[in-house]
Image 1 (cartoon, rainbow, N blue to C red):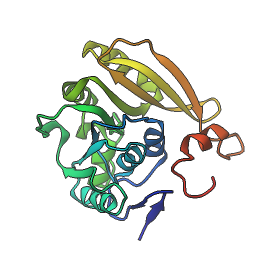
Image 2: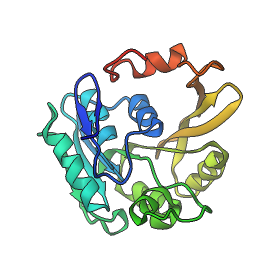
Image 3: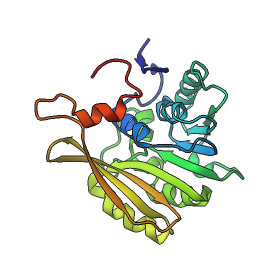
Image 4: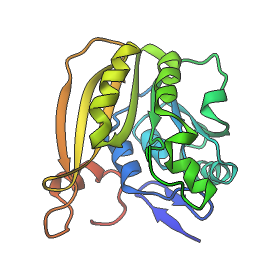
Length: 233
């Protein structure tokens, strides 16, 4: 059994289409959730991001959605094995067909982002990795519709496409109020974590470097993830 152990919970990841990775760690660690309210995670996979968010909130309720049946079964297993099983639930479904009257205070996604790459030979991994399975424009539009007036939409994207989607979001009345550029190593921008809301706020720009040139983790990355890692990095 493949198990990824955190300080307060563990992730079984034998059947999920996508395993625990750096993008999920970054997204889960950077989100500082409200203590109360409702959260929707789109494309939960193993459920790791939902559990990281739940660990930092006392009453927040999370719906974790995924289109892949084996992933959602495994996510629910991880939720049920966690200390917060009453506050997080995995739901099988396609986000574009997801029907609910609920509005969300927080919407989170580590979306498919290989816009032009060849489809992976594994159909399940292709659905998790390629934008064809969930076009980003549709993700933004429906997330905007489901967001409360003071809610926050957070996602992680390749750095080179961040500016494009900040501009496109404005056309939907979503304002990017924080952009965190993540560098794999110095001078190597890799991802951008973008925070959006319907409120008009001045954008804050931050930078995080994951590894030093000698491949060791930076002190800032260690501080960011200290609440979650069960072992010293």
